Image (cartoon, rainbow, N blue to C red; front, side, top):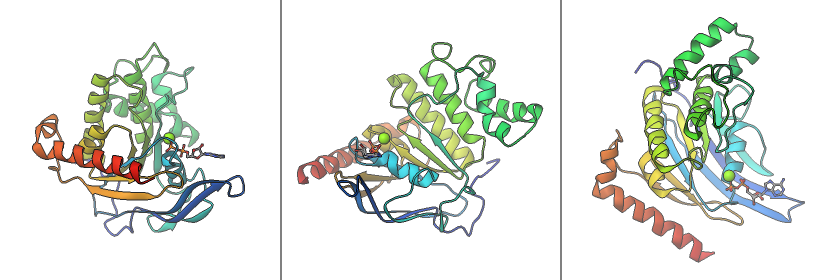
Length: 269
Ligand SMILES: Nc1ncnc2c1ncn2[C@@H]1O[C@H](COP(=O)(O)OP(=O)(O)O)[C@@H](O)[C@H]1O
Ligand SMILES: [Mg+2]
C-alpha cells in the first residue's frame, strides 16, 4: 500500500451527523427529521458506507452537508470531530458528467491543482499518474465530452479528478447510475481497487442493491418524508471483494435482506 489518505491513527470519528432537520419554505416542506449517522474512524483504514433510499428522500442533501455546500436547518455535521470547514479533504463525484467539455482530459484532471497555482509541468505529471490509475492513458489529449469519450470514460475522468486532492472522504452520488451494465461492473471493480490502494472513507449513494452489497461494508437505508436512517446493515462478506464474492451464498442472502428491509420501510409509511 503506497499511500493512505487517512493517515492519522488518532482521528476522531470521520463523519458524524447529529439530530439533523431539514425544512424549506418556512417549515412547510419537511425533508429530514432527527437524522443521525455515525461513520467511525478505523485507524489507517477508510470505510465504505452505502446509502439507499427512495428518490427525493434527501441522500444528495446529506452529501452536500458533508462537502460543506449546504447547512441543515438544525443539527450538527461533524467531520473528524469538527464542524465542516474548507480544510477537510473531501471530494465529490456526481452521476452527471461534471467535466468541462472544452478542456482536455489532462486539464480536467489537473483543474484543482491549477486553482492552487501549481505549475503546468507538475500538475500534468500528477494528473497523468491518476489518468493511468483509472485506465485512461492514451486519452489524455481528448476533449472531455461525449461522444469523444464514452460515459464510462467520462466517469473515469471525474474519479481521477476527485482523487487529485488526496481526499480523506470521497462522496459519490449515484456515480454509475447512467452507465450500461458491463461498464458499471467494470467501474465497481475500479473503485474497489482505488479504495484498497488509497483507503479513503467513501460515502456512496446508489439505487442498486447488488452494487450496495458488493461495494459496501455498511449499508444505511433511509425512509422518506420526513426522512431519517431506519436501518443499518453490516455487510459481513470477506474484506477483499472480487466478482467471486457475488457467487457466495451470503451475498444473495444480504441482497434479499436489504430488499426486504426496503420493502418493509415502504409499507410502514
Ligand atoms: N431549495 C429547496 N426547496 C424546497 N425543496 C427542496 C430544495 N432543495 C431540495 N429540496 C427537496 O429536498 C428533497 C431531497 O432532495 P435530495 O437530497 O436531492 O434527494 P435524493 O438525493 O434522495 O433524491 C427533494 O424532495 C427536493 O425536492
Ligand atoms: Mg440525489
